[in-house]
Length: 93
Image (tube, rainbow, N blue to C red):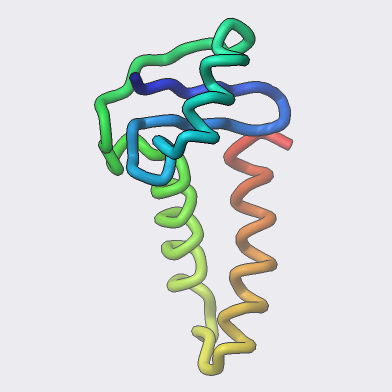
């Protein structure tokens, strides 16, 4: 089973990855499955994982920063500034 649930608060993805197949997760899905809108996705397919696209956009944006981050604190600051900006752009807020 591979599902994605999307609403105004975010996205829930279950793609049969090992962490998603715990007994707790499986029981929860069985209990609430009728409340979740299904989108079929290939099992264990990282290229279809929305977070990978978000990380890629964030990485591109931070790499273009001038001057580039030079310290871990610079990188953290850039990620916070550009991460919020990118997520807002990505979700139209």
